Structure formats: C-alpha cells, structure tokens
Length: 268
Image 1 (cartoon, rainbow, N blue to C red):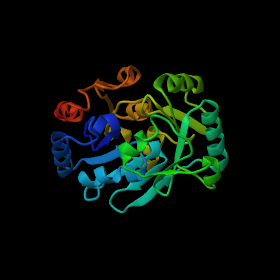
Image 2 (cartoon, helix red, strand yellow):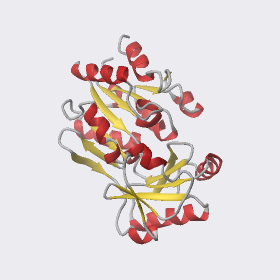
Image 3 (cartoon, rainbow, N blue to C red):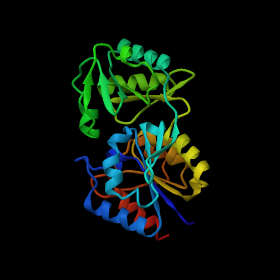
Image 4 (cartoon, rainbow, N blue to C red):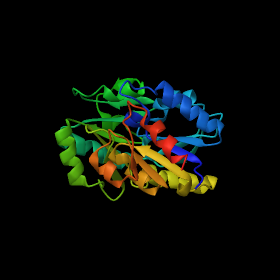
C-alpha cells in the first residue's frame, strides 16, 4: 500500500506538553514531504491557532491543508483559500450558550480570530494559551453572535464535562453535534462537521482517498478520522476509547510517537 497523506491532530498528538513540535518530529515530517507525502493538520483549534505550525512544517510549499474547528473550515495552505466551510447559525449558537449557562459551563466562540466570552472560570484562559488567540470579554455572548460562527465551546471541570458529554452522546440537536477534545472542553459544531466527514469532502474535491491516509489522534474528536483512515494511530497518551478503535497505538506525544509509528508503517 502506498500512503500519500499524513493527517495529524495537534494538541496532545503533534504538539508536546510544551505546546510545540519536537525537533525530531519536525525534521522527520519535513523529510517525508520532500519524499512526496502530504501533511494535513486536523484540529479543534481555530485556523489562526494552527497557521504558525503549518508554516513551520512548510505546508504551503508542499501541498498541505489545514482542517480547523474540528472540520468546520478547511484551508488550502498553498493558496490560503477556504475550500470547505460549514458553520453554526445564530439560532443554534444561542441554544448552545443557553445549554452551557444552564450547566454553569464557561462558554466561548470565535469572531474575527478572537476568542469571545462573557463570564469567568478557572480554566477560561486555556484555549488562548494553547492557540495564541486574544480573548475579548463582552457583556453578553449571545448579543455579539449576529451571524454564523464556526464552533461554540463549553468549558468546565472534567467530571462535569464528562457527564454532559455522556448525556448528549454526540448529538446536541438535529443540527448540532458535540464532542470533546480535552477532558474539560465540550465542543459544538454543525452536524455535517467532524474531522472524518470534512476530510471526506476534501478528498472528494482533490480526488484522494482515505485508503491513502495514516491518521494520528488522541481524543474523541479524532475518532471518525482514525476509523476512516487506512491506518488510524492512537497516541500513547490517548484515552482508552481512542486506543480501542485505533489500528495502532504508538508512543506518547512527548516521545515522538508520530515518528515511531511512521518509521514502522512506511517500511512495511
């Protein structure tokens, strides 16, 4: 089998606990691109929170793509063109915020590459620290959402997010799906959006196929892309659900797990 695409989640997969790409992994991925493979970064992060790493890996020069907001937006790294977009309308965004308020979750969304919020929480700054995007406080989050947004997120302590996630079972309503990326992040997207669904739309457009893909991930929002890929690889630090559905379990994100897996898989 000839594999053409390396698809990677970012946080706790490509990126170490220090929120960076290790030197070994960085050098290896540059080499694989020089050999003709293409890289797709697929993350719950906003696009602007992925650009620095895409540039570092030379995706622009090597035909890569950025799948952001769990698949709500796909960007061609070479042209910066948005090739797919599926957002949440105002009405459903307001319903999600109401749900978060009812459950005492800190909620946020993204407007003009800024993280917008209207309350406080011990974990409120984590998304900004991870992505580098600025945070903007508003008096009422619903009032500033006047048009579609790519994603809405509820944040709280792990126990509370886990309980809500189990109750929703991946579906907020007929139009909105839900998932977790970190144990304290409950993420809401358009029902037509997931990493796997959105990648399929990209592959249909560029005449590629999941049979050509090795995909890496660690969290529930990676599940369908790992299942669809020719080889789905769970990081050593992944949760048990992801490890069970993956074809391969590799080393953790702090020990070059991506390189360990690719060295084995691409030799076979």
